[in-house]
Amino acid sequence: MVKIGVLGLQGAIREHIRSVEAAGAKGIIIKYKEQLTDIDGLIIPGGESTTMRRLIDKYDFFEALVDFGKQGKPIFGTCAGLILLANDIVGQDHAHLSLMDMKVERNAFGRQRESFEAEIDIKGVADQFEAVFIRAPYIMEVGPEVDVLATYQDKIVAAQQGHYLCSAFHPELTDDHRLTEYFVKMVEK
Image (cartoon, rainbow, N blue to C red; front, top):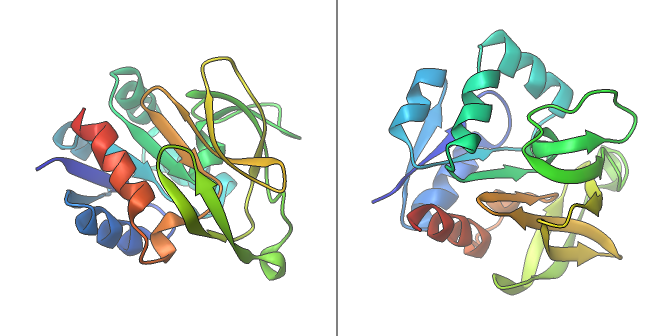
């Protein structure tokens, strides 16, 4: 059974663990960088990207996360996790982990009160997937190696680049585990 870690600094950590286990993998909350050696794949959950970056720096995770990805181990970033994976963020001089070739806009669909749910199709993963958008970002542009998996109102909301996967929405907040199952299959390969 593959072991999927969920970065345990901020966000819907327990919900991701529940979704990972429903998808047939073992879920482990990652609180220390040393735990990264024990897992096969990692989910970076939603939250607030600037705060998450501060916590990543405070707990000395930065280099370990970049190395994890560069070793070819799969990473799935949801919402703020998507922002952390991007190599270009509108309005910021510096990106965070810079693992995916994409330009993202933070809070692109509005603030907390503009949060919403929408049914979307995710290429190769799921039709009619109930996506929960909470202060969601979106992807403005992708590089040639990035495969667009889903759009909403002509905005890119899910993408994959090799062993990196991201979504602007929160797949862990519903009982539809198809996107998490897709990530588990990526890890198994």
